[in-house]
Length: 453
Image 1: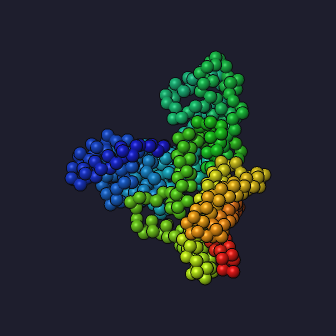
Image 2 (image 1 turned 60 degrees about the horizontal axis):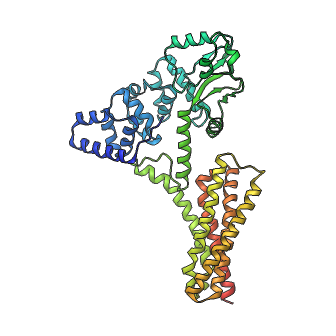
């Protein structure tokens, strides 16, 4: 599970460690690292160039190194893991839980994976292969195999004695999972019921039958939604025959939630969620080049629209001055709607039943805001250029573009999702194209029709 530290702490640790590394005092650096939380060390590693990361890594104890790997973002971890030998990697991950080991090994090249698996004991290898067989963004990829199960026909006293004998239970265990002799899921026994009921009662008397497990193929987003809506700390994961496979705990769900939030934020700028701040120049350039190229094409389309009105622009200089205002206001209005719609999609609040109502509502919002700001800017334009017709034209263009922008803010993410494209990734690019084209065309078209008669 990833840990958050303050910006001031991270800046201090990075600066202090950089100074120690430059001084060549390995013992001082090792002592500094040992006093830091794994998340703080991970933050330091992400804040230094790649060539120095192995130097820092070699100063870590094996028990600490595995925890640091888990805290790194995906790209930084994968880059580091691929540079480690299989023996060093095995030493680092041997203390980790199976689901955490799976996260680490997913960054290995396929050719190197069998060598690492061969170095593990049979039980852990089988458990790990079970987790790796499921996609990372499903319930199977999130689940932990460390589960405490009980039978329905035993007494609570037997369960308590079993737990004492076991000596330790997995983290975030708020309930025991009740199964039959074939490991089919039956229900859960909350810890609070176990402790608050008479010990001579049977598990079947106090267990909960209304808690549904999560199918192993369930999408990560749906897992997050269920944890949020049902206030879960842990949940059982089952196959199609309801046979218990593992469980998902709140710490993994919180990490998944943060990853989804980061993905949406970075996608709006066409940047990879896990781009390494100090990673490869080639990799960063390749990722960003795609969306820069797409943006260039959309910009050329907007430029072509402007070019269709070159006569009007040559004769009336004010049009070139005011042109960006129409596109900018439309862009902001559309972005507001786009953000709300993408969030509604993420929360599962939008469907074919309420989409038409939302579209109508947003169009009215765009029309009202467009009318308000069009009136204000029309007056400004009249006072600025002493031209009433120009003020009315730009006011009309603002109303048209802001209304179209809010409609596009609903339509664009809906259509993109229908065609299997991530609205967070492509929505802003498409929306900008729409608002630019509609804004330029409406303003310059109206100006050409009215002022150049």
